[in-house]
Image 1 (cartoon, rainbow, N blue to C red):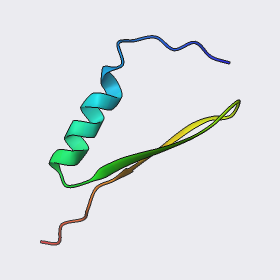
Image 2: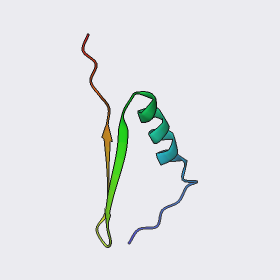
Image 3: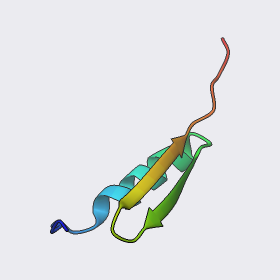
Amino acid sequence: TRRFGGMGLGLFLAYNIVRAHGGSITATSEIGRGSVFTVRIPLVSE
């Protein structure tokens, strides 16, 4: 396993930025394997 440090602000900031652009963040986790975070931001056609 790995040790993680920090204040836990990274995901909070990412979530707010993504939401401001109409997107979403989802997460899945598997014990012993880790987590996967999916960021979706809609495309805007010009």
